[in-house]
Image 1 (cartoon, rainbow, N blue to C red):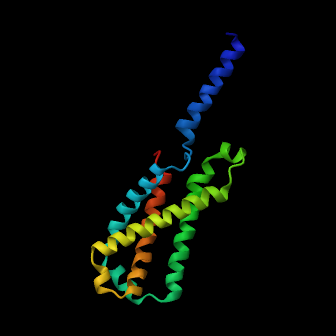
Image 2 (image 1 turned 120 degrees about the vertical axis):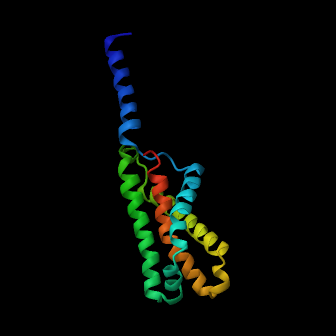
Image 3 (image 1 turned 90 degrees about the horizontal axis):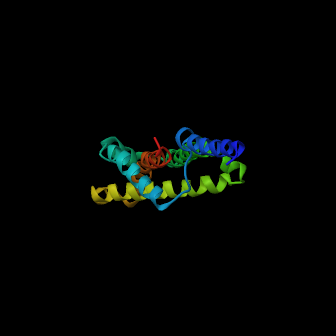
Length: 160
């Protein structure tokens, strides 16, 4: 093997090490990421579902504030996905990986996971028995906000 080939091989191996150890880029989205998102949502959601204040807010929140909570959740998720995930995959962007596909796929999964976890917690604690249907739905969306943040953080920071 010539010296030039050895140097090229070493450079390639160094690039792989740098990419794996220093850059910590997110991998392709997989079922493991969905499971990780569920656990993140469960962990963060449990800290909020027992709050009596959340229960009171679900009863009294007005439509404009409710819309603001849903919009804020989506904006926070997009920011997390972009700054924690998309900003770290330089080589993938150069290959033409689409930011909208990257973001929308994760946004949809994280929000659905958050809504499922919030629904699960709200139902098993019996809030559906003491709240009207509309109040119960508002409680689910209010609880989904921290659950969504937990789902995204658990998945996007998985290498740390």
